[in-house]
Image: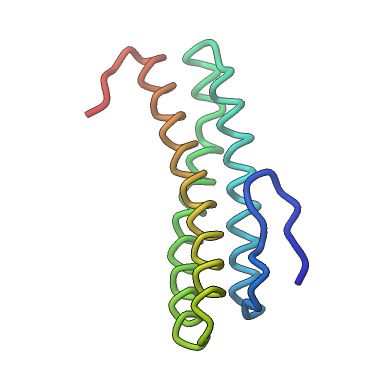
Length: 122
């Protein structure tokens, strides 16, 4: 099976069904885009600059949220239909890595927004 070339994760070597593989690749690419948006936001030096870059990150995060729901559904199917616990674990870990990366980027964005607007997280 081919690997997704990306900074954050690659498709597990387990024989993942094509539909699950496509969802995984989509989620991986959006996570990479989210990290690019995060880097742009973190470099913002003013409220105006932050406001101009924030909508892109918001859209990417919403899309990632949808992808997480889809990949979780594909994972459940894969788990039910695959007798090899190592393959199931490998696919689960690959998905979790992408999700954790996105969550970390989201937290960094929130901290930047709070810092720029001099607010404390609730």
